[in-house]
Length: 361
Image (cartoon, rainbow, N blue to C red; front, top):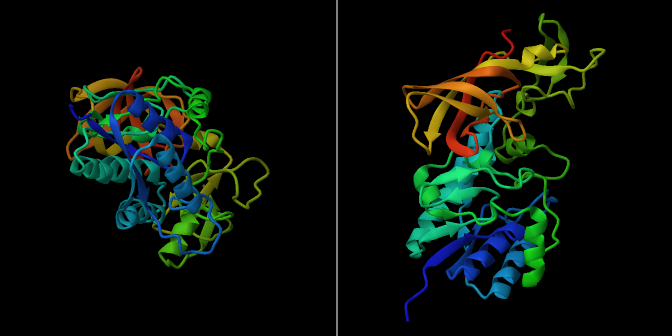
């Protein structure tokens, strides 16, 4: 009897990854479930969401047992600390706004986990992401359910990574996924989704959690307006991002926004003029194009999650960089965030925002 091809299913304990694993079984694959262990569970403080949480681990064990598949944990705590947490803190401390989910995807979920899957003899990795993937071509497209679409966070993946993966939820809505889980008798069918960071504590921002985690001393500084007048004090520039208007603790008579983070002088600049947030030129570093393009090409660019993409002219530069001239300005593109490139529904790739003409101040 011919052995079935093996897929490794990335399983978090949630309903999406559970249904993805079940669909792989229905498609005739042997499946092994693997859960990433990213953090020790020896801290008594109440968690926002436990990447290593007991509840998650219990859920994923029950799902694996229900599906009748083997299940393993893959310890990537050191890699998580270096490639995601340290990276994020290094960005926050210099006034940038990192995208840790994209780094976790690139380095861990589609990096180390793919390496592990290959060692097990798997022909692919299956995940519960909402995205349409032609794995033979390594081409990624938007999910049918745009409210759940996750391609922005996957735009840094290489064509090689994508060719090894399957994402069967691309044509499904969340309600359809839950109904499928109910049909399968999975106990997590109605489990509530977490909207929080996977690493943190209730009542504490992700950036503050990182500062505490790495034992960093926070240095306070001035909050100023665009004329240099001191408006108040901040307790660490890591707590601010371009475009932020909540939690500023400053009254300016009308809505105020963070328009600049001056890391060199440890200052945060506010203004009530939201036109200072607009930018139509962006330079991107660490560019990945999973779909080949000429040195100059037109595309649509998305500079933050939930933002509608805008048309741009892209020019590839030396040292894995690109210059983007937007046909219309976007608000508050933050240094450190991902800029994703599209050709209509097709994901071309992405990179990290490294400079903009925002503010001109």
